[in-house]
Image (cartoon, rainbow, N blue to C red):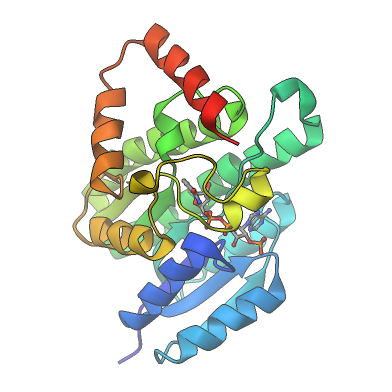
Length: 260
Ligand SMILES: NC(=O)c1ccc[n+]([C@@H]2O[C@H](COP(=O)([O-])OP(=O)(O)OC[C@H]3O[C@@H](n4cnc5c(N)ncnc54)[C@H](OP(=O)(O)O)[C@@H]3O)[C@@H](O)[C@H]2O)c1
């Protein structure tokens, strides 16, 4: 019997790599998407150790043509995608006035536009089959306006709201849709964003990429709408939801002062 296929964006490192390897070890073949072909080949070789057959798509998800290529792969019914993981994403730390405009637009294109279009393609492909799963990676930062990480936190707030709505839209079709909202997880993310590896975050709040991947996939399997890995982060997310807006903004400003 053929193995179900999972497509993972941002599979070349960090949380996406761990998600891909966990999917491979649980019996999936893979479509791995990112820009770095050499890193995708490395992850594919590791996934093959679990018996997974891997396709790789070298794509820049800020580029509309590359996104269309991935959408076309998702639409290909001869090799149906059972699980879509929208994990590719990044953030740039700094005051908005200091960050260049094209860079901000690029971040929104990857974190928001590509995720939206790929989710849409998956929903269209999966609905007639009446099954499938979509796991979208947001962030704990989605719960708080975060000065200095302003655009990033806003893109992740979009991902959270979008995914929660999609969870309901997809339900009648038997499609599971889950939002994974990790807290601070040491990966390539910090270096890309201009942050240090722990950025002054207390070690009790740090989560590992592998733990985040495990918790995310378990939540998708269980049909949960949203999951925040790590019990302290989960409580924090709950509490942030109860804080009035003016206080939330102040808290974000204070948090930003400690983040470097
Ligand atoms: N680490 C954290 O603390 C943390 C916390 C909350 C949420 N997250 C989210 O978790 C997700 C994974 O991040 P990570 O922590 O694993 O960081 P990472 O190690 O830097 O991985 C980011 C992945 O996204 C891919 N990517 C970035 N820009 C891309 C583009 N233009 N086109 C295609 N792929 C692109 C990268 O691949 P290439 O460079 O090869 O293209 C890489 O595979 C992101 O959405 C991030 O926002 C991370």
